[in-house]
Image (tube, rainbow, N blue to C red; front, top):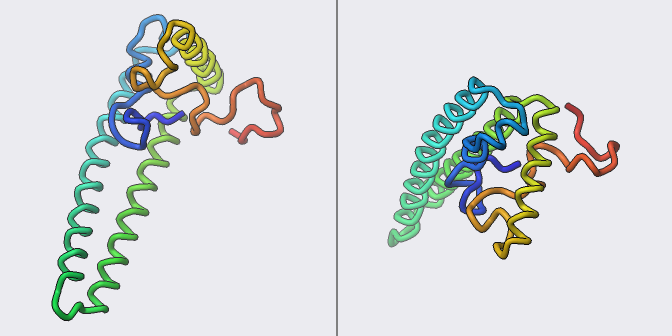
Amino acid sequence: MGFDRGQRGPRGEFGLSRLLSDPEIQQKVGVTPEQVAKIRQQESTFRKTEIRQRADLQVKRVDLGDLLAADKPDRAAIDAKLQEISTSQLALEKSRVNFRLDMRDALTTDQRQKLRQAMRDRWQGKSRGGRRGPAADNEMGPDEPGFGPPPDEPAATQPSE
């Protein structure tokens, strides 16, 4: 489940916290107020970290552009800057993966299963109501990566917990 999704990409509004703000979803899933508070705090911390990392990456890309625009580009400096960019991209991706794993760990296996079902029900209800699924209000779909496959798939394909 892409908790760090909002703009249908890896950045932006955070779907799990938003979903768990709905008392009906909280009840269906069986999350405690403490779990909701922990998830909100983790999302806030991740959001700030991600903004800083993306800004750092953009600055490095501007620096690379400056190096490339020189009359006599310094290949060694360009290579070094490319390495910095690569390292920053890897750090950002690791942060995203760790955040997803932290969000997954914030809920029990049973809660994750109930959440998948609640999201599936919500998604299907919106599809029938004229709006086209959860993307209509920037929520993730029921089968986003991070929680494993839906419970109705064969157990052999589900990741170990």
